[in-house]
Image (cartoon, rainbow, N blue to C red; front, side, top):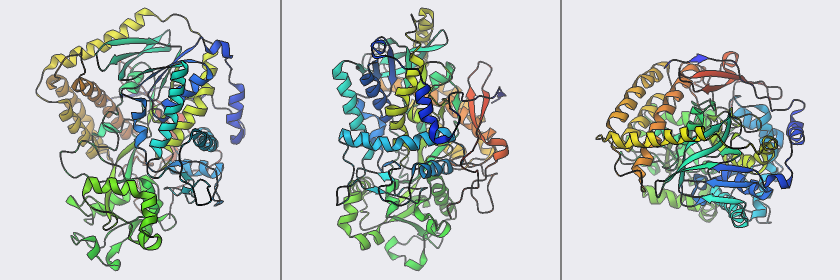
Length: 640
């Protein structure tokens, strides 16, 4: 796949000056929209997870006319509900040395120095407001005996800054955002459109002015207009087929925006989560996450001997390798996710893995149960233990859990500036759908923080600066008609192939190819193999996919086929981005670029930049945004 390099791109919205003053400076300089004018302005928000739900609720409360869209039957079914472990905030309730600056530092370091300093510092600042907002909404955070909010530790930090609601933090936070959203629906400021899937972006006179959607129940194609469009559609980890994402998670909305002019940044940055239930058979269609919070009390180990098939209880202490504690004594089992995932892969590659195929390591709670008592462990993790037992048939109170890394979160996404606006004016992107504040690796418990920061506090300020120049007049009917024709033509094409293979079979093959060649470890050879095979598989898809049913009905096969078609195009760009970035950083590990200890070796001289890809008829064009560090010195990451 050929590409060309274009001019550098810059974030012109980020203020200069002391980093702790930049967000306040930007908020004051942003243009305001008076309450009477807000009633004349329309905003579309696609997605109802933590980012989209909080954004639609807040924009509605501010007085804008909001249309909210999701493909689920209820906004509260967004995938944010699956998040388990917690949400970071620099409250320092424990008095253990935390601060806004330390959260900023940990996040920049955790992202392997591939995130913007200004954005990350703002995220750390806003984090303290999120907890207050959530508590006011009634989110039932865990509390200590005296009534104060409790916190626990997560990977990549030596302080306890993670607030949690047992093992269902995402669910509780989403219910808070959902209640705020439904309040605005009742107030008439937000109109809810469930079971609608965005299939194209309307760009009129160079501005994002609406979307084309399909009613997933009736099949009707609809046009919806607005003065600005907000995408909050999550990540694209399902390109790997097997991931911790819900099966419905896809890339169609952001990929369509990419085709209409929005740059796609760092597509190769994929997070592999170390604490997932291992694959158990070919029949699986997704994987299950076991919260990183379990590594607070669970100890990770494998047998010292290769091919040791004894039951874990029969392996004496002196024949166990607590490898994370051995290699990274300062952080132990709480090293960041990319570090823990590669370490698990390494011991399994050595032949010391456990379970079917040797693709697993133990997460053992024996010591925690002896120290704290079973009741205390059950109080903290009971629902997670129950979920594990239901899936595996094994009781983790009696035998160690078996875990193995799996695709989880994507740090890449649409490029946005400090205002969260893409390269298409009027198109704002929030949460995991943008290329985010995490760099090349997301620290645990930071996804919920970013989604709510964007939705509750950042976007409502910055979008006003754009909308102050609105309303933007009539939408070009020709542009709308072109978008609708594109949607109908693609649907007709999918239905007309009438081949012999299901969309799922193509998706599974693409996913395995991506995991094998662009997964936890990438090489030039593997990436070139992927770039040779993906176009062949895509051509076969368009010649042999079987889509049953019609377009004028509920048709999940059609939905899947459209999403898989977009995954092919995205997968190609991911592999190209990984091939071009010949360094290792965070979740992007090139085997050719590692130090003597096997750790990721960055190349700051050549790759201290964001890779922002433009879609053109002649192929991808790479634009680089230089990353500069004034406050956190770029060093080789060490958690030892």
